[in-house]
Length: 183
Ligand code: PRP
View 1: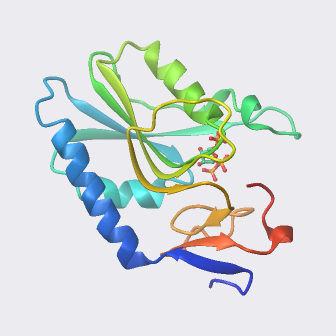
View 2: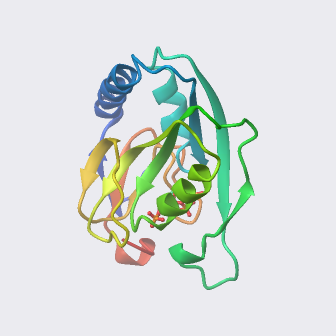
C-alpha cells in the first residue's frame, strides 16, 4: 500500500503507455541489426520494468540477469564493484541492451558497461525506466528511458526503499525525508 509520505508521479496507465512506446523505439533501433540481441535485467529494481518491456518488443532476444553486490557496510555507488550474479549467456558478437530501473550517479552503469565491453559484444545500449540527472557523477549516454527526473527518491514498480514498495504498480516520490535515504 502507498503511504501518506509519498505521492504518485506516474500511474500504472501512464507507465504502460510509456513502456509500449519504449518497446517500439527499441524495436525500431534494432530492426536492421545483423547480430542477436541480449537483454540484461539489472536486479532487483528493474525486474518489473524488464518483464513489461520485453513483452512490448517484437525483436527476438535472449534475456539474462545480473545482480551487483557491494563490499563493506559503508556502501557507496563506487563500491559496487562485483557481480553477485553474472549473466550466463555469452554476449560476444551480440548486441547488449542493459535494462535498469534507474540511472542515478551513473556508477552502476559505468561498471556494467566496462565489464560487458571486455566481452566483445557487437554493441551496448542502455534502457532505464528513470533517467535521474541531478546527482549524476559519471556522464554516460542513456539510449532509451521512460521518464527523466532531476531529483527525488522514487519507489514502486520495482524500485524500493529498504526493500519496501517494489510491488506497487505506480511510481511514487517519497515526500518524507526520513523515509528517503538518498536522492
Ligand atoms: C539501484 C538501481 C541501479 C543503481 C543506480 O540499485 O537499481 O542499479 O541503484 O544507481 P547509480 O546510478 O547511483 O549507480 P540498488 O543498489 O538500489 O539495488 P536494487 O536494484 O536491488 O534495489
